[in-house]
Length: 200
Image (cartoon, rainbow, N blue to C red; front, side):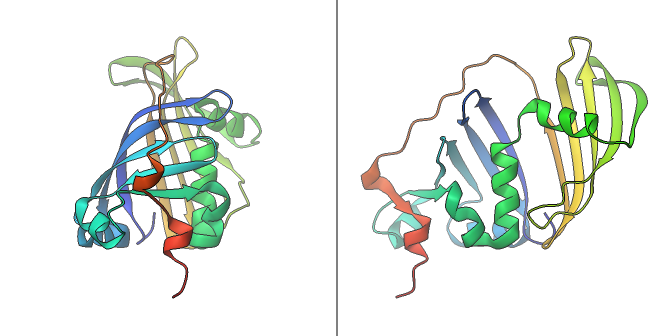
């Protein structure tokens, strides 16, 4: 995401009634990776619950935050905390269902069938198009999807521009139906990021 960050994430997410699941996130570049290195670790566990997500920080962070290891990011606070980039990340998290990219392409007037390709051993059909997202500081973006012979999304690539620079997101989907579990961390070990950033 521009100069802000590059990252990888791996885990299980569910989008039944609300976003739920647990990911291991590793920051690999950008200003966010620099910040994480100063806090003692570039990798963290993230738990997604319906109203917020929780990030487990390292011991160095906890030593500066009253011994608390978890940061709570309420979705309603993300735009206020991080501007349009935060709003876009919130949208991506809450609307990153496998069918979202397919829906965007179905609504677009600019879609083409690229051809058949093998993705991680699966035979897929590749489609590409341009969609107009027009919100949260993001301009028109291109979307590529790879769908297998069971009509399930296997891969998607989204490219666009935000106020922080160029954005590229690549996602691989597998193990449909896997259980997505996330428990709220203990309150005594959790710091709300909104309170942490209050002046004084």
